[in-house]
Length: 356
Image 1 (cartoon, helix red, strand yellow):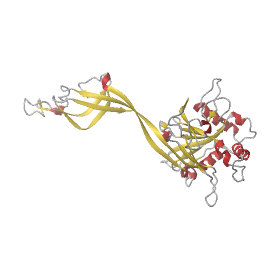
Image 2 (tube, rainbow, N blue to C red):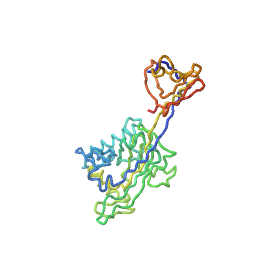
Image 3 (cartoon, rainbow, N blue to C red):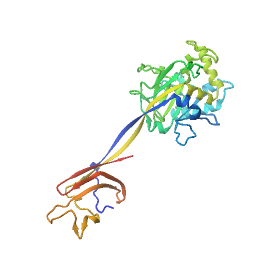
Image 4 (spheres, rainbow, N blue to C red):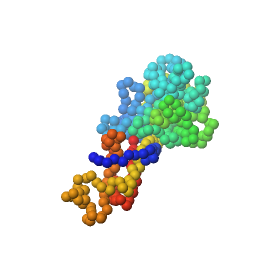
């Protein structure tokens, strides 16, 4: 316990903010390949599926993300006999309430692919797939312009290994210099091509919410690639494609839709962000400070051990810095990598960083 204290002045303390990034690759084999039977956990409520990096019954398994599906009240009111209609509507409203907030009339905002938040229905996403990434992966937030999702246009695999359709990459390509803000933090637009430029926001196929760690994809992303069930893929036939997608959305359960989305997933990549806040204390030791020690071993027989002659200068070796509260309660301890010699002819500035 210290017996003498040196106060820290305002100029002796500064605060810094550092962003650390970590690359997160999630291969499709985890969610839809060889290991999917053991890595994917389903629930009796049937409202979402959870994906783990190892068999979910293993004690070493880590939760990676959840996948689910929901639709807005606009889609709900026009679909008679829709499977799990109430649950799909509740999922959509829950996600929209948290991520998009409310409009001036007090109604929950619909997801808007172009980010304009207009009320005329332009760019509105009524049928959405949701990917909720765990905090273990996303950390404080997903790094902007790093999100990439590779999807096949079909989840069906033929006996010869073919039949999964075209592989396309979806990313937040404009978010390095352009992003929006919602009640849940910043979000960016997702596009199916990296050549998109500012002014082409209407081509967006979804949203990624960086701080929340959630990706929202419109089901119309697959409209041009699917026909009615049992038919071949129809290129350019929007009506037939639209019929196939709508029939799948209305007739399938959330769990079936989530499983279908998983089997279309080839790869997910993004960088997470850890915000490291630091308080830096400059502990200044003047020439006349701490030249003596209160350690009982510093003296022997009332004589300082490090002095052989009366005229020798006192010497100490600094090994530890303690940070104390105003009432002299020890709050933190910093250890030096090696003892530093201190005598009346030297002055020191010890830089102590406290991360939180």
